[in-house]
Image 1 (cartoon, helix red, strand yellow):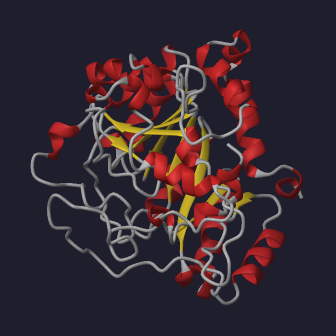
Image 2: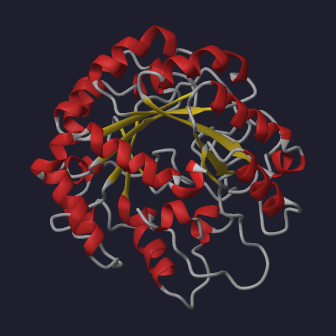
Image 3: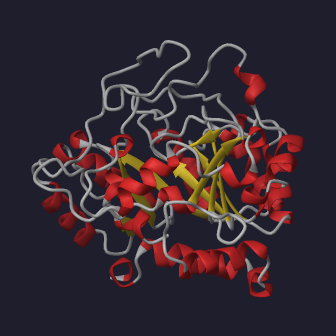
Length: 361
């Protein structure tokens, strides 16, 4: 019954709050978060008053897996990609920027962040600057880095579950969950709904590993089929068949969700909203273009989690006031705020338009 009484987000926020007692001293990132929560959302962001509270920091474009639904597959593992790894000096420069230094929560992504040789030093620096830090990882390299990440003080691991690492996670996940607040992530689509034993296997793994926190994430639009509009500087190499997202036409999704929630009442589970394909779009509740600041070590920007390749302009080439107020940010915010407008073109096919996790950040 625990997961029904305490939603995963509440559980996560409470744990991060207990781990970070320094927030009681109200440093700048905490004051910015309070201001963000109290202020109305507007078309333009005045970062000097109220800036983003969540920072996605891409520290590498290398990965040791090739997932067919990867949302950054167009920039991974290209020639010379090692030069894009963020360094400690890059990180110091990024966090000297007024938009970055006011973010409370920093999530390190890639690629696979554990491939970055400076990752531990980067984590240690960000923690010393009074931020909450999480690392997204497939965990294959975690055994040799776990002690160092614990010592660096990171707050959370987001461990992704794939077919390719499922066997390895049987040993790795319990070790991680015993030492760091760990959440198990699984990207799901129509295949998993048709074969719910795949979802049940993830829940069983979480239960066995004493990691009772599972985040099922719907498939984002991506360059392998759903988001062909992204402009690519190099040809994208396909590496599999597209994973179809869960939509309002996916038969049995509600039934599967309710049945597994009932059977795994001891596991905190967050289920994604289906992509709306029929009838008028319900109220657009995604707030990523307000709360999220996404950047890589070279300062290149990304719009949101769906458009996450960090191929936009550099924060160091723009006036600070314009970093979050150029196109397409303004157009997307305008479309999200207008209750009578259709979904912005860049948002179509994205489940976070109406997803409850992203509606209240």
